Amino acid sequence: MLDPIFDVPQDQCDCNFDSIESQVFMLSALKNVRTLRINVSRSLTTMAAPGSSQAKVLDTIKASQARAPFDAPLGQLRTLLSFPDVDYDTWKHFDALGFFLTTPSLTEVYASSALALEERFQSIFKWPESMPQHHNLRRIELVASCFDDIGLAPLLAGTPCLEIFRFGYAIKHHGQGYDYNPAEMVEALSNHVGGTLKHLAMTLEPHFFGNIVNGVVDMRGLRSLETLEVDYRMFYGPAIESGERNGTWEPSLPTAEGREIWTPTAIPPLNRILPASLEHLELFLGESPSVGADDRFDQDATLHALFSVPEFESAPVIAAPPVTSLEGLPGRCVVRCVNKTLSKEFLDFNDLRLGWPQTDNLKDHLQAMGVEVHVNSHEDPTWVRALKKRFKIETW
Image (cartoon, rainbow, N blue to C red; front, side):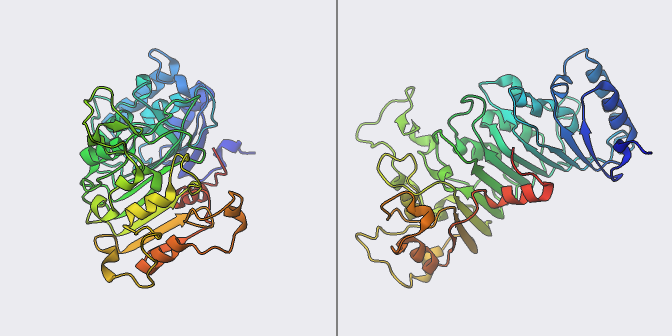
């Protein structure tokens, strides 16, 4: 009877690195593996420890890859997967994957629960001096992960040919990364892969309790971008240049007299934010519309600003807006909302799921402009649903 470890296709492998013996066998014997799924355990998080048995194994394999990259252990690896169970050591797992990320043949990475923050500098991935850049890595998708621009920049600096980057932000471990700065993330992307990136997703995981430090006001540095899936809250904050953070003045900057604190009416329209190369935009509305002035995110006001929709109290809904309404926007614009309405015209929060007879003026207006509007959508963004379906994942 064959050992169950052999009962897998020759071009893919699920590995559990709970012993040094399994590590040696799996990494050195299966040279033709193209898809490797790592079940991160506590032993894997210590693999990079200097002098450990695991580190010696990895050093030997790295040396073999340097001599004959495509005939060495993992020399045919194309796709790396890692969706660990979340515990207090999870933040270490992305660093533990560093060895696999340096595999020269690797083209795709899919992972969850990765963490790389300036406040935990030891969590930031660094490319080895022997491999400052990875020219084959074209696709990275990180879901339920916690990165800031300081943590992301070193990864991007080593991927000059990156074409696809999808990222779902989540707060980790008792408040690490509680507030999120998407504007700085876009700057990091523009600086490192602005000329190569074609497909981008930036979304927030459900139950985001933090604030947006600075909102995105300019994505034109992503010169080759073709598709964008983005949570509306990425725009919900003052520009970096304003000197405001989380709706307050940065203490280190002088306060300009006469300037008002940021409100969502200051969000620029999309045709001033997006690059001219963009062909498809999907705006994800992953949180309930605003029902009062005290809500953190005013979805209604954000949509009015992004699509230059007049306030209905002062301007009636028009059945056929001018053709120029979508001027400067991608050929296809989609708004996907988890609730039954885009507007804030309701009396009770429960009505979001039960429905009510009021007209959704904002939805009607956007559809008249040529925007595809889907309400009562799945709570996960499109790219996350596709990832879960492809790799048969229910949650993380």
